[in-house]
Length: 229
Ligand SMILES: *Cc1c(COP(=O)(O)O)cnc(C)c1O
Image (cartoon, rainbow, N blue to C red; front, side, top):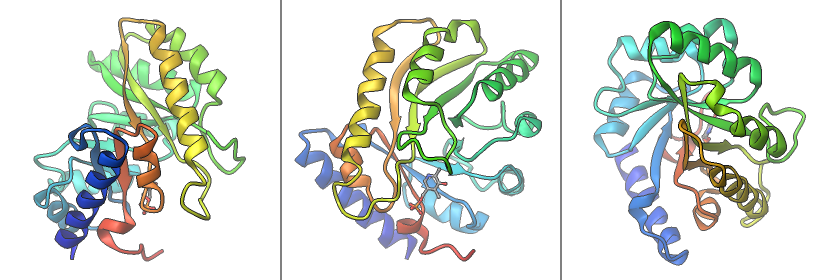
């Protein structure tokens, strides 16, 4: 089933890219693997997802120990507590969910200690929702302008989770806003940033996200089926 699901998503991605006049190869499929087993993750990788995104540190650690992500990059995409930074920095290819200054400072410190440069994205709370974490657009732009003060991170782009959409097209304005913020940030050059990743779009809205410039969609349900909470 995972195989058929991924094939269908790839088709829909290609269609959405084409409709937007984009090359489908510009858009990566990140499997949002939370609450799915190492075995399911391995199957998704075998069926051609480009990377995996994990939400919880404990799941990341457990599945890593089982070599679940072998062959593809693994990203952290969930809310990260500062006391767990050590288990993530240097263990993932990209931390997509850098959502506050205190976390950025903590990642910088840990990466310096390990003598590495950690790739990160800034998470934007694009719908200004109280229930979600993330920078405001202004905070993100201001902090990106100072990113050289954090030489052990490399800012690769932005991630956003807009409000739950009720119908197709609802989230386009949020996705467009993210794209504009990314253009604003990339206008100010720095040694350790390049706005190449726009991580936006999930099961219910990835086609809209692709229409608005997404370069990475994070899909869980459409790959693995509904999660059993
Ligand atoms: C769960 C999750 C997704 C995927 O959500 P689906 O609607 O199941 O596709 C994407 N991004 C993040 C950060 C998530 O936690």
